[in-house]
Length: 276
Image 1 (cartoon, rainbow, N blue to C red):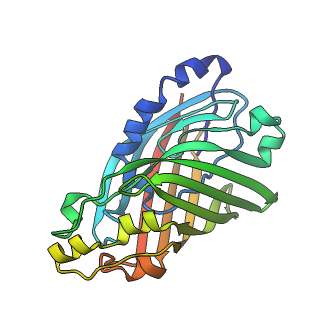
Image 2: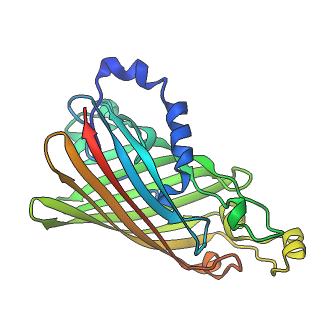
């Protein structure tokens, strides 16, 4: 879901990233898997939207336990491509600055701050180190290859116990028309470096000794593949509802880790929006 921002509002926008990063951190696990950006072209005029979101996600990487919450929703989008959103993070789509508004209908490329969930104490096995949440940096690039196919990519860094984790997600999205609405269907896969996988799914010698679990040293490679459904319905020019369901299937060393209790990692969100 996306909304616009006036050029004269940018100075005020620049004061918001740290505040919104904190809001995002409180919802860190909202998108337990799946970090591809799905947004419209920047609006012709700035917009503010607010509302409420209900979200459900795995409590930790590979966990069967789930966390659920009711959270505030905020979104601010600028014609320049800047955005602050509880759905999109804090970032900038640079295409309107590097090209023009017409090119921004086909291309999206920029960077954003985005939360990466960890492993809280309540779902961490005894003897295994807790993994805290992280705010990562992601570079994204999308292209509307055809009228029915959007190709997406996102490369992120800063995850993991020592902030040296890296991930690359590749995906494609198409739409299924249902009446006047459109349901987006996304197929994606995620690759991660060893540092990210070791932090989320690995068990070191000291942890193995303390927990009784076998050592596990994941190697860099494919971490999951996923399917997601996204949709939005507008009740009026100001009121709308949006939602996402995502099912990520862990593969490789992530799937076979002794810490993994469920290979299927599902997340869900639904948001009620009011456009000011």
